[in-house]
Length: 239
Length: 261
Image (cartoon, rainbow over the protein chains, first blue to last red):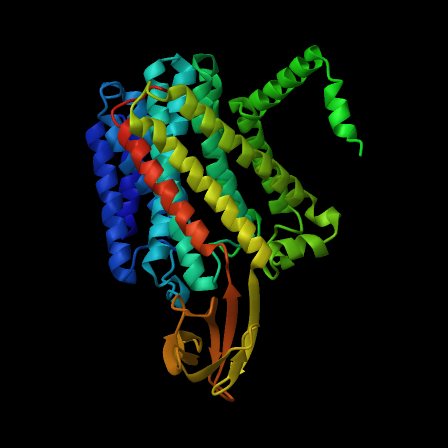
């Protein structure tokens, strides 16, 4: 069924400037995820292939409400940028083999699924925040910064909820809500960084450029937390 | 009997007292400033990042095997310095959070809506409770792992005993257990209590959690049990709950608005 993913990548990369084609790309990707989920008998949230597809779909899902906001409704740049972001992660997933791993007993809990799914929704919103920050720096249009703030605030809320779900799962699975591992340290760094970003807004309009850059740097921290830690460091959270 | 401190105070000239009060006011303003909070968050991030690459915070380090304060006491400063630095900044950040909250409420009281005034402070309170939870766990946490044969007893640090029975496992095609459980028996309220433990389903007894980590069925049935005491768990949960409530309230008041008020 990888043709569904390929179809989605093509639509994201070459048709996302049109909202209808962007939505068609998302529909194809969601269909691919549904097929994977049915084959596995669970949410496809384990391994680099499945998580990258889930991340890509999350970016597209979270971008759609922004495409319809009054400021971005007529802008092709945003939907193209969001399509590029979703398409690149889907493309990366396309070249990584998928596998059907039997779920270890410790991962068979709703808390795990909530923890991972909410984290990817947050990552997606942080990605959209970075995109809006880049658009602000290019054109200095104030509403873009307001939209970036909204994306990051909602993303931060998802991320906090993900950490709460992870803490509850950890307590029932390992007896502690916190372990000193690289992934958990970087998760805390990411959470603190976005707390810093949200507080930066209170410094006033003179800091607008710094705020926009904050959203971009935050997404770099997000990518390191998601991909960098798994690839470069040894962690129980690795793929 | 002379009181040197009192004599010193008596000698304080009015201009000195004014200078002292100005100094304290400046210190308070500095400690309650948003800028300091931003620098402190940045600093904590930096030290945690350093720690993630160092021996202490890396996976496989003994940091997870001991209560944090014991680990800090037993580990050379060359390994644990980043955590000491992060804790120091976090303590200052906690103080800064309290003072910022007080100042925010003081300045906005009766000038803005109740929810918009209180939501960030509820989130701050949640954050502080989570920091406090880590402090409790770092101080009084307990962890021990032990293999127990079926029918064997586990003795808790307080002397109470728990028996492990009926160890069972379902083996997968690769020879690894796909599901496993064990029974634990303990005396509670004058009668025997029997519970089944499995992954994600521990047994809580007299403040200790009993976690089934692994089982073996050959050559004899045995379970690997981990005993935990996490004194900060309740506080962390309360903090997480408060943080979530504040967060939802903030999202509610910010709906449809993009401004930075």
